[in-house]
Image (cartoon, rainbow, N blue to C red; front, side):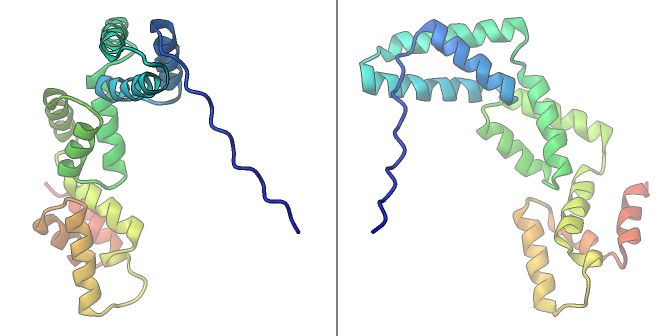
Length: 192
């Protein structure tokens, strides 16, 4: 009879301190871009685990986190405006509508002002942003003009619903799906 492998042991929870929180924040920021709200939430989770395991004072941990976030903002390590602009461009390339991009940024802890500024700056650069994103999404999913073979009308409705769930307006979704060829769909972006 085979011996069952032991489950992996959990790492012990470390007690938080200002130094530990700073090292943890910098290590996270080396690997991932983050907003100040997202970093604050991650550090609060670590502090909560520490409070449960070691009885750490949460009020003291919150004060340490606030001071650390302020320090990182002053040093320019954290910049919510730059993070928002970068995420807007990235999510647009993935084929997401501006409405969904705004929701994603809000979940990441970016302030409403930074979200609106990033979206308006992006709209100035790319006035047909949602149309371009819908085309990118349709191309990736092989919808509309990128279909390999003709489909039943129900399939077309499912494609329309998929674009709607992705946050695109009915007008944008129908425009993309109605294009006769991929070249015609791409030409929609060059029209003024």
